[in-house]
Length: 203
Ligand SMILES: C[S@@+](CC[C@H](N)C(=O)[O-])C[C@H]1O[C@@H](n2cnc3c(N)ncnc32)[C@H](O)[C@@H]1O
Image (cartoon, rainbow, N blue to C red; front, top):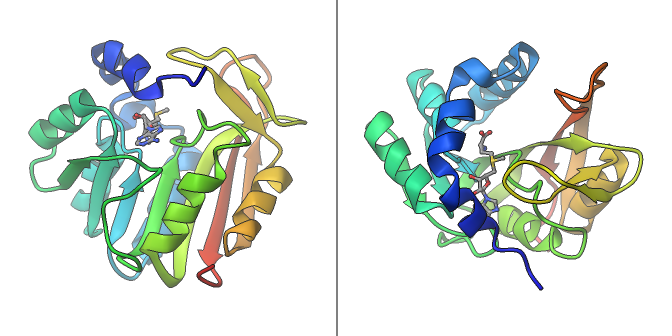
């Protein structure tokens, strides 16, 4: 049985917006990493799985040409109302409704944490398709020693060893640039990873 991730977020959208839908919930080192990376992207940037849109709104204010996409209509409604200068669309990361080579960068900040190992190649292939050659990808995700599911608020999420995720990225045409990890002394916040890559070839 496949999990209805969009439906699960939709049911708890207001709660999610209150808890995590602003830049005040972002870890300071993530803020620095994502901001520095986004400001170096030369061209349009897609905030893929933008949720309530706070990254998009924040980056727009920093002069980045960013648009957001998410499957949850409630998040997109909130994002449009809160960040009127930024473009937001309802859409699926598994089938992005834009032509090939549309973007210079894709930010996938914790938006692929619900994809299992059998399904994660599809959105990553889509991100490769919509990126220009050499285009930049930044992924944020939960780390762990092995790929495994765990019960997370909203719906099941997956932990990935960075090298396992880097292997999937390589299979769809990305070349790894940097990996960042952050351990956690307590169960929360959870161990975190970020991968910076660029599109080496369209497959
Ligand atoms: C944990 S939230 C992260 C939101 C935001 N990027 C942030 O950093 O706060 C994951 C988001 O990815 C979106 N998402 C997950 N799978 C998706 C898919 N297949 N298509 C579109 N959006 C998806 C969810 O709807 C949710 O808004």
